[in-house]
Image (cartoon, rainbow, N blue to C red; front, top):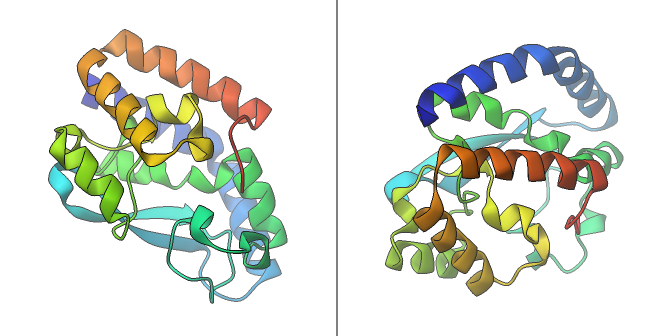
Length: 186
């Protein structure tokens, strides 16, 4: 049921956001050179790697590390990128990953391939069995502000509590967090 719900919502979401996708693509292209999409290497289900699309929000010379690890992330963000991140619109292309089956709407947020500490903690607790999500329990409870052990604790709680109704609760909380930009540091 979860997979069917993901496919239906991702399909309708892409249709609904199609004009926004086009406008964002044009804005990115107009502001800076480089690709419109950034294909981020992420760790997915069963610790397998996959390419997760995001609208490019940083300059092409930005290091490939989590944003919070950059000394001065604002140095690498584009003007359009700053807006995309604040509004979470940079995440819209991930609806394609949901359709493909690499991601779900709700699940632990996929870690970067080089976030070894986070990936190891998740694997040790069995969280890596889950399909990663566009949003998740950790994201609605702190997002960028959470230290890794706390993120993993929320991921474990999600693993134990997962249900259709819990996913709906997380989706509704996500909409509220996105509208208020709660927990967004970059």
